[in-house]
Length: 117
Image 1: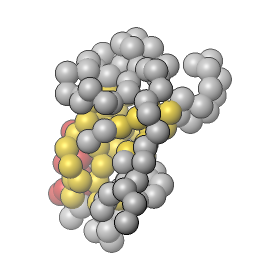
Image 2 (image 1 turned 90 degrees about the vertical axis):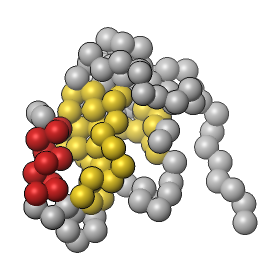
Image 3 (image 1 turned 60 degrees about the vertical axis):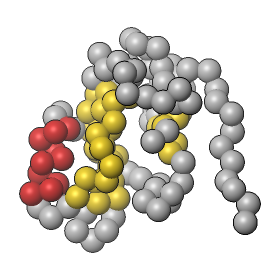
Image 4 (image 1 turned 30 degrees about the horizontal axis):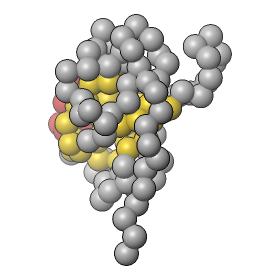
């Protein structure tokens, strides 16, 4: 899964950064994400209470871990654990990510395009 980080301001500014995923069956609109101290423990809480993990836990180099879940009513939401020590070992070459130790994005990627049909 490709993921593009979006930085909305300088590191010293307060604000909310984010990311883009290519739209698909699961990811079709805005997805609210919750910051958690231990993403694995919260994934377990979700599944123990009838929710499900959508895909797999994703490392975001220099930022942390991200996971997407679906609750019992079908709403998709994100879980995020901050961990600046996460490396780029599991990303495709197309995926943008910040340099380790930096919250700034890598150079811009080509614009996403949707197939016509």
